Length: 303
Length: 277
Image (cartoon, rainbow over all chains, first blue to last red; front, side, top):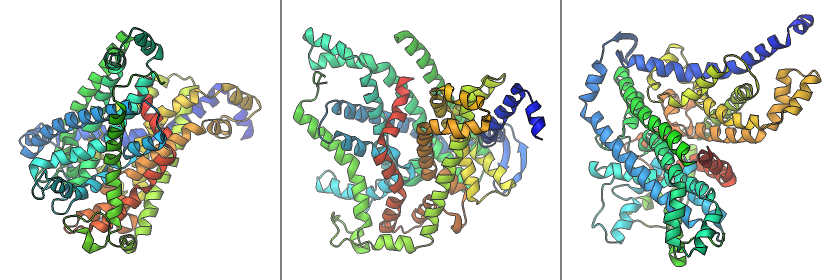
């Protein structure tokens, strides 16, 4: 045995080593990520029901046809648009504000950051439950505060009224997501050279001038890219909705990804769910494509 | 620093800082207060903010209900095993991808990178069917494998950077001394990469601990429920006991809160890393 090992050339031994070390990772990725994705795309064109997973027959575009005649599903796309645009915009504005406020040192700044960024680490599902209780329509604390402030007269069914459910879920999402933009903006602000501000100060520029002529132009590219990246993440983040409303009432707070999630868990029509997954994938790819194209052109052009 | 422009006047700044602070802290505080209230006070309206007499009865009830100790153990098992598995496997693949030269390297690299483009939502039904066929549904090990599989590309890509930063000299002298490749990796390389391995461990641990989708989909038996699945069944009831749910949710959030408190920098660096690229 020992002799044989020594006879192997260094190159051959290296090859064995490479294979040995790469195989576990490749195996896991191929089985857990690539296989399901490919099979899911195939399944989108097949008739696969949860009660008989062994029968799979191709049925052309039937799944897509039924999907697009499903009113709840079509509604999820309207909600997805509102959810992505609304959440990302609010997270951006609030996070940007926090970052600017944190530019000057103050006592307890470390502790403050730790607390304000904390929601980022939490499970979306748990955060959803937390806010579900706060938004409770009969004895939730948010209703209590609004009544005490005289904003509403009696309790509002935030999560039971289809008009308010999506908005309520978005508040919870913004609560967890603003830390992202705060951290991103703080990192971006650090990249601006101080000399620019000093030079501007010598020229007599005020704080607003400096902000609009130095700060914003210097970080706008990176912020734009981060907004796109965050949009893709937000579109594919169903956990919070799953914890808070499970898409209800009557699908009014479902986004496309949370709809897919609940349908898979319910386990009815796997073919149709896969078709819904394919549609979501295509939309995600378009956004990712825009992100990558912007990264190349903007970064290339700016620096 | 003092020269920085200041578009918020001082007083306004502190008011805004305070507002953000209250907005962030209040939900935590409310969950804590809820968990300390007795069942009668819980549903009073107008709301009573501070419980008349704080009680730990919700925590007691939650812990006695079902198999709470078991749920915590299961969650820990999934998170720890998932994190260890990813650290080991991603450590190995990132080492190869950052150090060795071989013909199929670009292809392998692409396989890792392209996972970011894969449709996460498309794969759930097929994977579930595959696991059903293999008879692997309702097992903690299945949940661990699926979650680890999802995190390996992230771990590998993050670790490639760390591996590139490790000086080659130490490994080379170990190899010259007759130490085998595998031994060198475990005795020399892994210890040197520990900062990166540690970050990966923390992120994967939290991702597994926070997982809902996979555990809710795959776990049915009570003995194998994780905390998340247990809380999912608590809120699935028509008549939710919010005192109990609040206590359970706080327990389930505790690891994330603790990890973030002590290791905020790791999280911040991970997010801010996107800016530097």
